[in-house]
Length: 145
Image 1: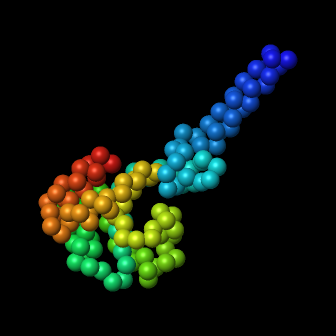
Image 2: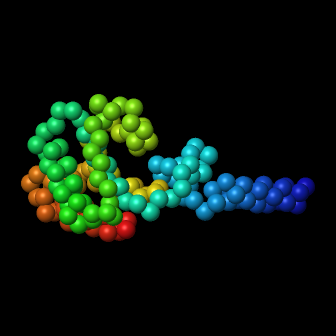
């Protein structure tokens, strides 16, 4: 009886592994592009994108985050990284707002299934220490490229 249970356990384990390998075909199993069944729903993208989600009313820090991020990307990564500013209040149905579950001001770097959230660093430094934020932003982009 124990031998039968062992054999059935091994068969179940092997079956689960092969089903997962077939389904995902080497794609990442987690991240913003993952479906509930663990399989990626979109192919891996090699393009790096920066998304800045903001509200309609913005403070000087919110505006500084956008200004420094956009300027850094345009001056250092033209043609390699895209920057998109999204008003999450006016564009509530934007699929990116839903995909990344955005509920507040957020700065994300995205490459395929990889995502880097720079919100804290951006809001701590963009207005008072923009060079520190720029350095961090460039470092994270360089790692993704």
